[in-house]
Length: 241
Image (cartoon, rainbow, N blue to C red; front, side, top):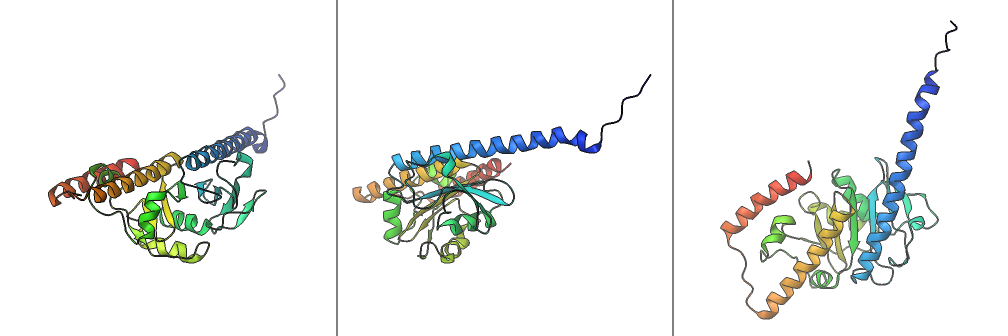
């Protein structure tokens, strides 16, 4: 009986490598579609007028996939997305990386658990930021439970390293940060999570505005805040498992 020659290590490993490459390509295609979908959603909500706003997701341990600069979020296509390294340098794409990539890089560097970042200009939240006001009044139980207080980062010139530096004091303990005279940045375990935090922040800003217009905003008491803070710690722990 003639024995069959043994397969070489190269031949044995080839199918696994090919399958891995296919999975990576599929994953990137899906992330491109997600970025396109949430970009359009952000535009339709009025959070990204003109060419403003940007979104990104971790692609792997060394790179991120992001919306490009100078494009309407409504008109973006999956093929428009660009790949940058974790220093913000463009690696591939037919367009240029957003000038605000430093903001995204700062978040990813400080928070290994974060997989997606969204930056937008929702009108009411941005109005608070433009008035130098954080969204830190304990008016709404659900907000304290999910996001806690939303701080205000100091003003920094758009497209410079100052932006990332202004966010650093708040990145570890917050998932949403107002940016003075600029807008809002939120982040989470995926694009949906980051985007829901964006929506939640704008909703709370609307509630705060209405409550102050009514003239009788009533903050929660210390006991209620303490219980909500404990619940928030459990919530965050479960989300990161």
